[in-house]
Length: 316
Image (cartoon, rainbow, N blue to C red):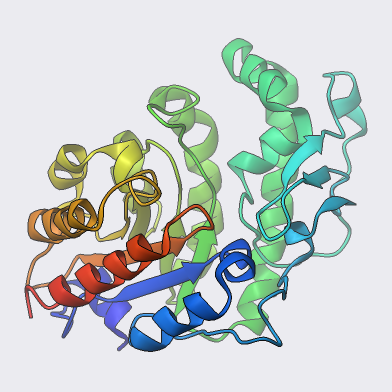
């Protein structure tokens, strides 16, 4: 049993597990100085880079420029080493939805596989109008995306033997869900339930990353099969996360990315301490996510690693 599964099942992990993601843009900016920190905190940074790999871009969307995905969505990137965004929506009118075609071959589950896919296909304003007016075209798009995702689930289950499955779909905005919880439960909850059921029936644990303010639907995510939710500190608020999650919904906490570029090392230390003190338990239920961006000063990168190393044994 991995430490993350122990977190998800309240099986007393030895320490609070930590995942670290360093954006390619951060490696490109800091290079050897970041490698030095990564080596100092090698227990928290398993993947390191050197002169041969500082400029490596792992997926096409991190490259500056434009590319089109299998759905016909046009992605644009203006900052090398950062993620692209969709700027070209293939079905911008309700009339065009009549001609919607899903990719012919199933693949994996990229970030934004269900809800964000709807935004990508229609455009944010159009999909918001669809939800507000409950247009029949909304269900048409949902059905197509769900059907494709169910095909992808069958494909992944045949090719991915690991016990925990990782999914990502940003369901929230900075201060609220983009649609009401009631409409989320009506239109989207059944989709996630159908997709995740295939994996639960196969005995898999489900880890779901979802940015934004999603605390109102976290119990729903648990109901549809999510074993551990990767949620953001800033968007949800520590009080909400403690009330909704502690001892009930295992949490992979994304530390405050809006503090890291501007706070002091002392503030970062206090932030990490407060999060772990508030949400941690000796039984489990908490792991930590650290994402390093190019806007973090080096002293703050070092500070967050130092604080996490210091406090992750608080409940050991």
